[in-house]
Amino acid sequence: MGSKERITRLKEETRTNILDASLQIAQKEGWQALSMRKIADEIEYTAPIIYEYFPNKEGILSELARKGYLLLSKQMREARADHSEPEKQLEAMWVAYWNFAFANREFYQLMFGVEMICCNMKKCMEEADHVQELTCEVIRQLYKTDVSDQEVCRKYYTFWSIIHGLISINLVNRGMNEEINQSILKDAIIGIIRSING
Image 1 (cartoon, rainbow, N blue to C red):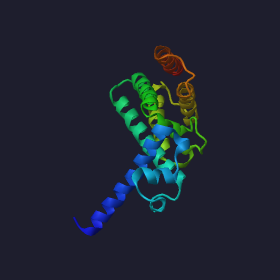
Image 2: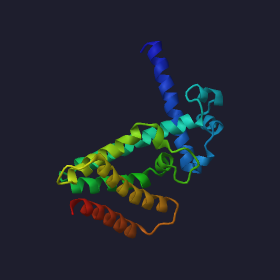
Image 3: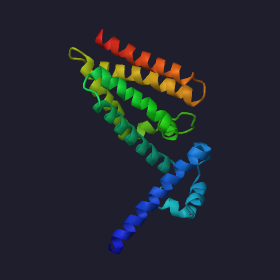
Image 4: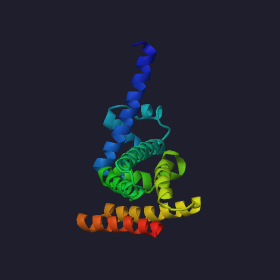
């Protein structure tokens, strides 16, 4: 391996280490505890080195949110691929969304600003649109006739507002037990699908 390739690889490893350390700090102490100094201490570098890779903490948060959206999109695509009927695809996708939120709590908090004081990361990255586009494709298939983009979007936001709301309630520890949550989740998904098919 040439010196140029080695330098590129080392830079990418350092960048990855910064992101991994940031996520680990958030998992241990919460996003509010994240600082450039803490990240530097975690990876045993000086803070100025981190600024060579990211202009500020928001740059790190944005990159982590981007990674979260990519992971969420991947899991929803995989859930969709397991079924052939649009109704089952949609249900599986929203269950995957739910599961992602609790398996990747810190990512979800960052992506959607749950229990955080930050800008909404969704506004500034195209990766955030992939989840909506993927879901809207399946919603459109549920309609028996042509339907406007506005109507498909309305149904997407109906799904999202209910499911995100239920997730948020649970992330801030004000939700019900898992059995009741799953029942509410399933009722919501099936009810909205019926409103499209009905």
